[in-house]
Amino acid sequence: MAKPVSAEIQRQAGNKYYRAGFFRSLLGFFANYVNFTGRSSRSEYWWVALWRSIVAACLIGCGVLILVNDHGIDRMFAGDMARLFAFLWLMLVGCIIGLAIVVPTLSLEVRRYRDAGWSWWWLVGFYGAAGLGATLLSAGSLNAQPWVSAIGGALILATALFELVIDLLPSKNAPQTGGAGPEPGQS
Image (tube, rainbow, N blue to C red; front, side):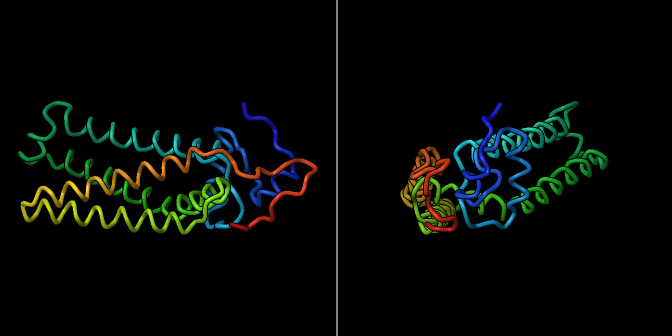
């Protein structure tokens, strides 16, 4: 169970779900849907990451059951329309969930960077570098140039590792009870 957080710490962080626990972090994730100000603690960030992983695992598990159970792929290609519609419905649900969490995930990431003492512009740079890496990866694959694919894959891996390190960093100048903390919204 998460330790209770004082209203003063939450006010200084600019987030009433700061240091939220397992269930409260999910509530805070959607309550702070477009809150790009303030801060988010490591616990708040990683509990939401666990929630997203649980949902993804459930969707993938259902997809595997549809495709593998009772020779599902063979039956789908043989004309089993019920199985095909179930798989397409599952894909549609996954896309809707994915689109619904894009903005709150981005706002949570921006608040987490601020809490770790990094500017959110680093996040923009990481996404840009990862996009360039994905472009190189696919261009190398399409043009049979493995060295271009290798550079793209390395760029994606490097940006993912840098982002992981920042997400693991402790709070910098963490809000303190009774002390003067940073103003909410400062980067």
